[in-house]
Length: 477
Image (cartoon, rainbow, N blue to C red; front, side, top):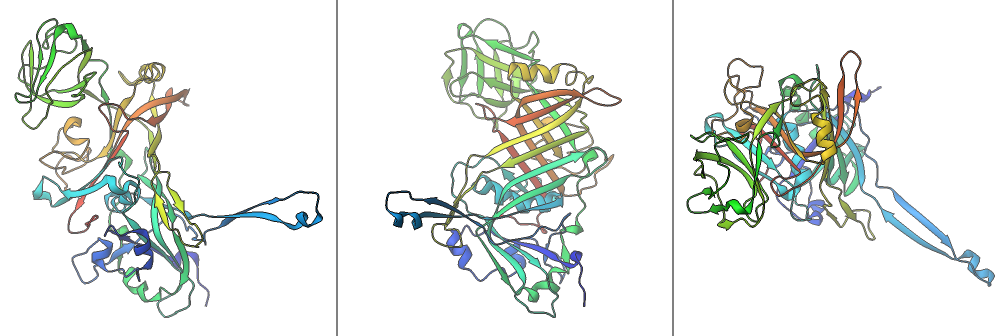
């Protein structure tokens, strides 16, 4: 009987135990138990393991590269002697999916590794888990996956299904444009490949899958720039900028007041400020009260005792809503695999985490279009960009919502007039430097910018967050 390509099933099981790669490879997995996969349902068909893809990737055996160098010499016997080096390579393929918080959160720990943590959201009424992903600080990997392609039906039992063990995500690209949905393209690298019989799992995999959750619409996302250039002031050491840990205060003993000029802060507090140029206290803070000479921070903020010895810039954070017809971000962990003398990898180590992207902007948008992006490019100033799905309440508040961490909890998307509680939220924050731009467009002039993520004394280069229903997804053990 003939079969067709779309009958293939793709599935994933994430190993969340923190086992070493060798232990992961030696285990008799996958089992596709709900607890192991970490995606639970509420009924008898509780196995949400299936990945509905936008294309059919092929898993192949890791290939080797053979370099030969012929030895030359006077003796004729040298003509047949070679130095041979064989280098193993990981299995590599891409998984293209329409993206939502659940399949996004499945792959993020495989990319960010030790930089990924999960906790119950502070807004307990919504029963949310919040996955936080920041750049890792160690090269060791701790999260791997089993990824399968099921070619045959449950009634067959040939060794023809494809199984990749020791899989990590080496890169993920998130893309969206007007009128479309968010897409996620995951580049997978794996330690070993095999053909085996996985027919016993077909019936389980067909019961439910990631396709039970709607993909995120681009029109529901917010894009905002954190402007710390327009409302900023540089305070010199002569003014005596002091930071007090106990009182949580920033004091200006002389010179320009905190309540006047372009950087005038609200006397009653409530503004976010950005401090840069100190030795110990660069960061972003919420104010509680402001006088002409003193800024008192919110009780949840932390300072270190310091008397500044140079010029300190204090800026009032001003978020600017951006209307962009398209945006894309790619994060890459540049892994290094060690194969030595075996077909399966002995280890894998994370390389430097990098991120790049692109954004298209209307040239005439106030404070964002015109020459704003061009100025950032020419001045070489990093610009923090938040691209997110999820809003707390009916009013837009980038300061509270961009990292999905507001205490009241996200309960809707930006176009929802009332709470819809989709429990399907996602956020990317990129500290971006504009690396190039060009003027383009058909009926409207656009500024197309390419971006590179950079770390500075205040910001991580890239941060990614997801919030989801805790009964459906428990990503990290």
